[in-house]
Image (cartoon, rainbow, N blue to C red; front, side, top):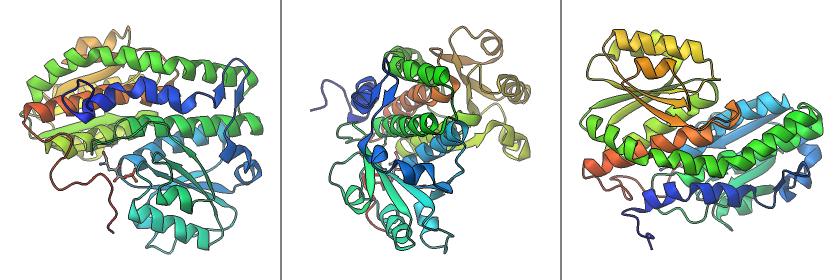
Length: 366
Ligand code: M6R
């Protein structure tokens, strides 16, 4: 059942090229320049006339929502807000029939997300679900939706659900951008052909496996980790930190790189490994100077960079390369080595990777 892998988590990490392909296959016809998604097509006016899009989710799905916020606003110019479902539902939020609410949930059973949906519906909002489990409560409770086609995710730590959620949300944003004319036809085609290339690039990124394992062995005894990223990769930093906490029980924090100087820099010493996502197109120079600040305080740098990077190679302790792609699509690649890092560290610390202590696959309690 684990297909020759030691754990479901590793199997699921390795399934990502296929899962992402399955998620866009049949929906994205890149040669024709068409994105077809029944749930969006049937409700296109609701999306196009939306005052704003409000995304509700928990945990890793909330991180996918944060990536989507940047993607939607950049491509469609529709204002987006992302909320923890548990906060949204209890705080008397402003919500009207002109809002589109997108609920993201792998299991489709998360109690807080389900309650947030019910609240949004009661205020007249149109609610769209992005779920992985077919026929789940959330998929039934929403007005329309689009499934991620990740296949069953057994490991408690979410991996392929995250990358396929980002895939679905990016397809929706691209479709709306095409309709609204907020991206040019040629840009649109570039996005589609780059998305087409993602499964092969994830495959290539997975080849860093052994290298990540070596790095894991060096830092497995650390008691704290920092994860930094900017732009589209800020949520990836949060997700990397969550993954490490969840399965290896090492305390980790994710931050937008520029926030470091507003506090967390005080934590940096020779004991602190800092994982920095530094793709060449994402405010690269700023991230380089963040790395220098960490180095001058003796912190250890593990950098995720784009292939061919020379600058960061010189200053980081370790670099992990991802293939070149459009900045907006980099989260689909940068996430992969962070999943592997948390996986190997957890294995080396003898943790129960697939069933970490105190956690359940779906959180159906409030
Ligand atoms: O099934 P959901 O996507 O609604 O679950 C949300 C969170 O409980 C979930 O992402 C959790 O944070 C994972 N264990 C993260 O790996």
